[in-house]
Length: 594
Image 1 (cartoon, rainbow, N blue to C red):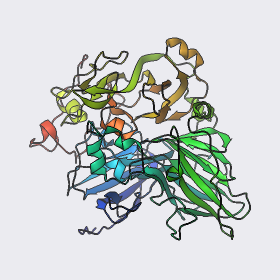
Image 2 (image 1 turned 60 degrees about the vertical axis):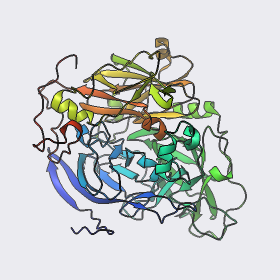
Image 3 (image 1 turned 180 degrees about the vertical axis):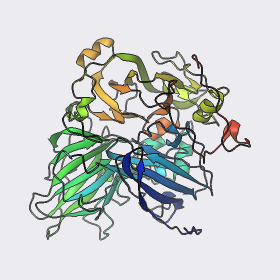
């Protein structure tokens, strides 16, 4: 395949293989990641990160157990990593694409990710994970479809729309791709997100400035699929529109790929039926609007059952007093419509109505009777009678360290070492890079400090995590490698007595969960996936300035097989940068106490 400067050749080929006795497909992508200064989402010139010239990037369309191979060429002027939000990377954190697991792809170089979407279905995203790049784009949708032998718990829609709702600074969107279940065309991509006019490098510098740290918090606009909001007074057609046929039902896959704000999403005069979130089929509920928090994904069914006309598609921020400039507006267009939209956009819930949002979150529960990646019902594996092996109580807040504003977990701000934790873990048992279990999992340090926070997770043990949001704004947390069983939301201080309020019957399982200001959210996690896994705030500024840690899950039992060995194309950096061998010899198994 030819590769020419300033041009790309994009190819996806499908080869049927038999892997571990399971029919699957190898899906090949070649991505050229570049900077484009001509897209101009608003009116100013700024750097937008594109993949194969696309903003947002291309769809990864896979089926349970497929192997995804993505050869990433880095044509930007900074090191780059791509992470796969919600893909669990079973036994294979080497492919996770975050600073703790991988050396970055240097400018002018390429690296190939190889991972299997094993035992998963659902709606996910990918995005760049370092150097504040996500605010400039570089992200897109991942769809993991059911195998044909697994029944989907709703009738096949006419078309499918992957809708990614996201907030970012001058570079936020929502992604929508439409794919008919019988055939993969047509596709429609919709990205909704808050956007800043300022270039991402300037934004990155500003959040580290003692005087202008708040600059990143208020965006300039909300875009849909990189397009400006619909404006009936403008002669420009530069807004996002979707054409539907009366009487047909469509699946919208909605993801918040933003960096700051939660959104409320709604379609004028149309109901939505919630059917899936982040790989879990939900009990189906009918909604007028849906809150989508940073990093989250949903699937909803929408039936075109209204008069043939045009209708508003709207995304407005939560916990923020909106105005016209912060309304993301697109159009739902009926094929035979001769009537354009007019008047005000439909009202949503009051932006500061936390009770509405919490009650909606509690109503989103797991469908226990349907299969998902496997034929057996999702509810076969549940939390109704588990024994907790560990509890982490994690306060997310903001503090000052040496006069600099930093985001902290239990008053520790994560410091990113030059050597990825996974390399140090494998080859020198972490020596010289991190000290295991120095991070306080049950208490808050008296004063804020930096730390390389790595904690032990008991392999095949149940972990309870209580996220406490000490900020006055929304937050959301994500754990790579696993799903959260979202068992509880609460107000005020969390105590063990709060477990009496948990939903342990049908808690939904998802990879990203929201935490409301001054409140807590509790989740259970079954740690059956050995590796080094990132636990982070999905809000980009919080993450970039230290609100994260890593959970090291180690399996010392050689039977069944432990996690996979390092890939043959492993990149080396930090203390291993000058190693002669392409892959250093692993150290002996870590001893207890590491």
